[in-house]
Image (cartoon, rainbow, N blue to C red; front, side):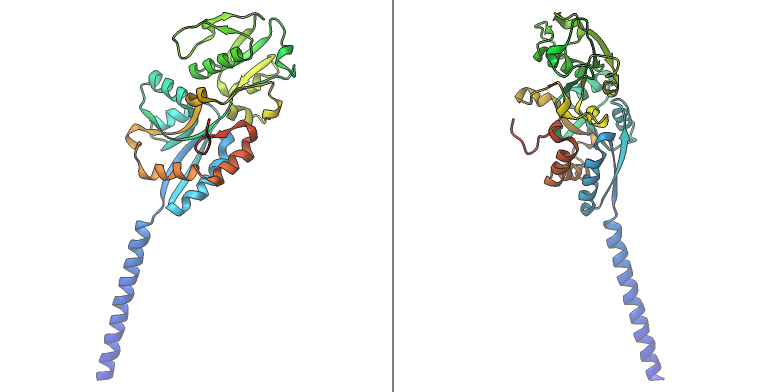
Length: 277
């Protein structure tokens, strides 16, 4: 009888201990539960963000990549809470977006500078451009201004010396070749090459359209003046100091991601967190 009681006590003790172990393990798993972060990106950047996706697993972050093919939806989705962060735009674009849409989106980290480029299916040198040539430009204010400044740097036009940070086609003072401009959604510029003589194309758009930087007939130079064109990771203002999102930024700014950026873009992108310019 005594032996039976001892066996029962030991069994109860083991059951109690086992229950405590399960409870502790369960609490541990609960604390380590993955946090889901939705990031909106240009579809050309998917291979890069897949590297980030792997990097943040150690921080118990499940990064969900949401692809977009235009320049408007990612900010709309972020402002409406459908995304947690996005990464596709430069600071000037964000500033204009916030102003036009009365939103409060903020940069939480830098990624790359993608030099704007001029492509053509009809000429191989910018000097071959003839009078009356057709030119396509992005239609959003910041990228239109950037494209016009690039055309000015190429010696094709002269812009009025005004205090405006973002000139438009209305600010062209001299147009010696009488160039004809078509302003399109930025994502469509690369697809307009059969309809125009030259197209001014953003880096990620060029990559998505499989346009090699080596085939560009003119390319923007990266310098101190390029800082407004640095691409950024963006969140809602209320999430500016979100610790989880900061871990995603940190995971992006790593050698592994820099290597993938080089693989995807080659000379079409310059990583800014590890570069001096």
